[in-house]
Length: 152
Image (cartoon, rainbow, N blue to C red; front, side, top):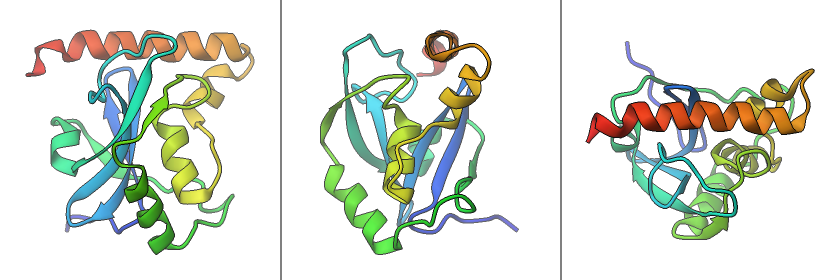
């Protein structure tokens, strides 16, 4: 029996070399933070991202996904209506994108928990330092983007 997301759920999408994150807002739609309208594109330092509302199936691009509210035991999620309202209010916003300090996972967690955090950045930096975390994520993003070029 398939599991369906509920409004406010975090959606983890498994891209090649990294994970993309979105917030489910209902009726098959997610809100997510991407670089210039493409969740598989490599960001250039200082580049702006945009918050988009799209059908979950379109964002997946055939990749595996799961509902992953992994911080629910650490932080209390905000009320569902508050998550959806806040996510909807960001649609179309252009924000500075930064792999280490403000990526799609930071954005999704801030909506659900009010905390800007990224497990990808934390895990990549354990024992290696923050600069290495950014390089590891950048390398994974580059590989993912290169492999994804032929998907259109």
